[in-house]
Image (tube, rainbow, N blue to C red):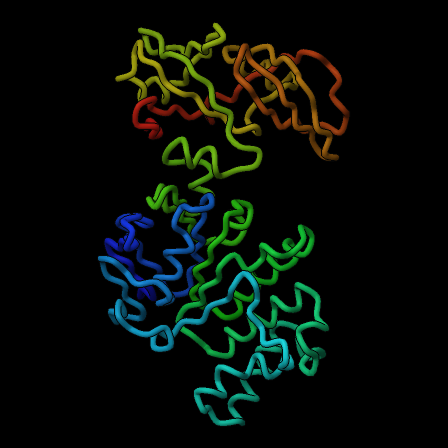
Length: 366
């Protein structure tokens, strides 16, 4: 499979000396849906703008469709960009907004009409082609912005937080539309968001960034199940991972929690933690892998503890239980249709699903 976009050791340093992106490396294959995510200021939008040609690359190489394009103008890169604020022409109809980029490139009017109508059909915009943007809802305006990109038939679609201006319900439906659109077009998408739910649901691969550095590039499942470091573990997943400090005992049989409880390590964990005998580590567990039911407690007798309940959120199919083990905060996802009113719950970890991280490097121990 050929790569549509290749970034090799790409850096961005502004004139004032601020280093926004460090040594970014990725090969984006044709048809992939790559999501760049991370907190504000992590460098994700800067990276997208370098691919688009809206920011100069300080060093490194950018290739699109097999050609080096470091110094190519945006119009010569065969890309189309969808912005956060739609950027529609208020005085033009939906039809002319979508046709505009082809008109100024002097495409044949017959081809322009065919492309606009095809995009309008894909996006369900045919009934709105004669309306102005002010007559459309937020979701419809966003579809027009996407349609304007589709008519270009580019090698790569670049989308910069396109759903952030929509309300929660509309964001959910637009995510579904974008997934279906990607499958239908079989095009390469590079998508920027700070919303890790969007990243998990849309991406074929996620790139998590922090302070200009790439933290991990992986499929959503791999990133959820095997986070590379503490930052990724805390960023990906809702609710976030639970972290706890403690020490591996001298015989590498138990994790001694800071609260004093001992949790029996699995054989696999004993193997990978062999070099950490007597050393401090950070334990991490997803809320889904803390259990309070009798069957799980019987199955995991060596990882039980008392969970002091601070408060619960009843969410219909399950409860989020916010509590503490000693001084450490814990969130457990309890699949029960009943509201939980106890002050203390007997709980256990599924130790096979527990991760341990190095205190100094913050990397996952494997």
